[in-house]
Image 1 (cartoon, rainbow, N blue to C red):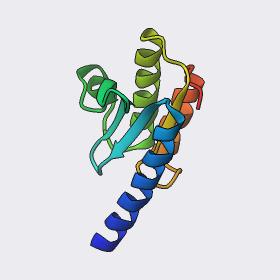
Image 2: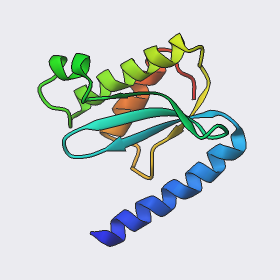
Image 3: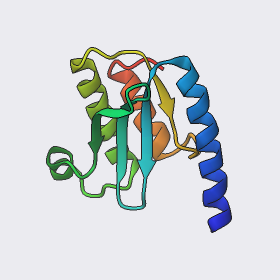
Length: 118
């Protein structure tokens, strides 16, 4: 198990290096079996601009489980709405070494449909 996590983290670090050279804000995704989290991060200032997750009260009340694609879709919509309120449209998507399918794909597509461009 440790081998796969190390491989994922190595991929994630290479992606973050590439994103940092672009100079865009980074939409970082983290998933666990129970929940999914999304953060909009400014790498130059080294701070989180905004975040959304299945642990927020508004999201938690509207879903049964936090670890499925429908929950990821809601979190993607929420992070896009928060980013647009802050005036951010163009971002770089950081999937944190996870494969682009399932919950990660659902979150990304939902964010795109709600106005983010990446």
